[in-house]
Length: 80
Image (cartoon, rainbow, N blue to C red; front, side, top):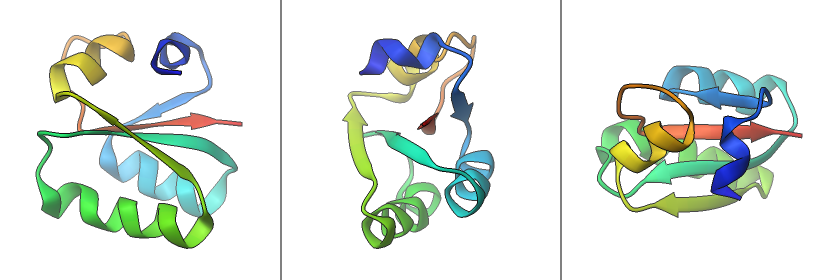
């Protein structure tokens, strides 16, 4: 599923993912295991409340690469 993040139907970044979780239908959320908890905890809680699948990625570099961006990413979402 990580390979789907190169498509146009993705959202990258904690602020954008939080906003999308409250306003759009999200298929899954990706969280880097090495991201800071203060950034990801609220996103995890929203996913639990809304029964959205959370997929953990080894690190922020791999998530950024999967999203096709040149910087690390703590979190990303796949829009339905």
